[in-house]
Image (cartoon, rainbow, N blue to C red; front, side):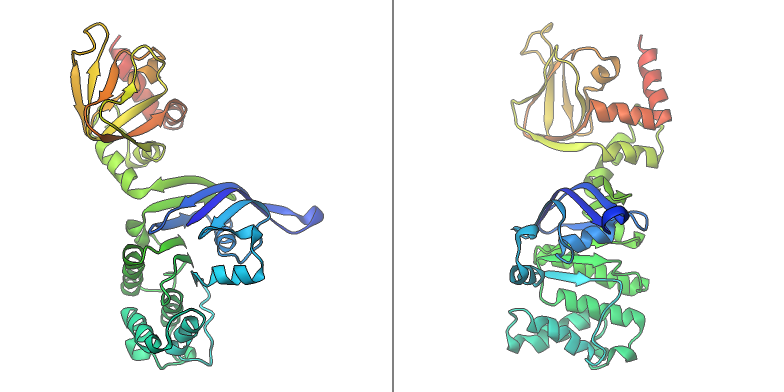
Length: 359
């Protein structure tokens, strides 16, 4: 749905030109709810408006809903925006129109049949707790109610892509929970993709991924489900059991998932160690030439790790690891493993202590 490559952006001209986005890469698939976090001024809203076609792509490549945004003319760009639901901090409602009329205007700009508009408009306003306010003008609504009307307007056409900038900032917990549930329903039932800028920690549990921006750069892109699973699997292991939650999550964020087939060699004896593995599904066999290729020294299953010794000692692999059945591993490459050792002093000391004790 969104594919950004080497995306840069600048404000101003000449000597006043200031770069605000630096070489950003981002891919978002259908049906994902992606949260973008980071300090104020880090470039989150700028990236959001570029994806929405509200700013001109200056450098890099950006594809949204299958279209290269920089190549779109005025009419095509308007057509792209009609497939995107926008939710911004300022609700931008038409003050002379009622809550329902504001929502109906969005439907009039789409291909929604006229006969469906009343029912669809009432249904989404009702879902957002505004069924008793559909005939009210914005000036008669609270700030949170106006924001929910804006959300209804953005979602009523069931857009393929929803871009939201702090959509729950003006909402209390109850209203925020309703909005989050509705957004997750959009991803499940309509395969809508949601990219949301937020500082609201209440939304984190609903996210599929968390993208963090700092100083105009995407510095991490974490699959929440995988990160939680990795932390849960690593915590009981002797190598990681003394790490705190923050340190453990830093290791988890660096790990990548990979599927393997039965009979596939993941590690080959004698080769240099380039990564270590956490087995999350399936099973693998451990063999060595010394014992004969058909003799299994061990069978590893979900929750086991392998390959870490060669990373730490810089010795060749001392065994071959082969898939017994289809499965999946999380991997951490040597450079990332070394980076984790350097950035987490207690991890480094613990790892070195374990292997020093084995000499």
